Image 1: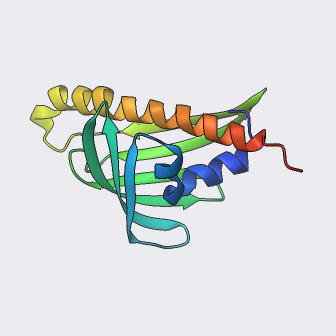
Image 2: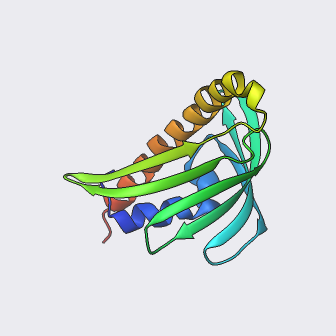
Image 3: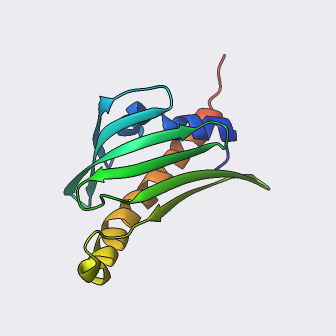
Length: 143
């Protein structure tokens, strides 16, 4: 992404902003709110299919990372890390998902469905839309 790393990080950490800038997100509802830790219900659409999950968001300002621990729904137990790395010509933003489906016998079937079909699609849209937003903010001309 072509924007200051801290701006990208703060935008990604600001979940209230997500439904406004990410058209596939239906809503984010806070169940608990803190400075660097929140519990939220997140709802999005995957090609018109509504999906919803509950996550703990941990904002690590020292490491410039955002962690999500999925607490409910099919992704319960999944750990997600957003990383922000300075590169020549921009900032590389990655979303890493560590999923271990809670029923081991079903994992070979469920992990590709949940991971590739749902998570991969939503994560790619999230990165693409966030990139458009932060780059537009960076390139705004103010008088």
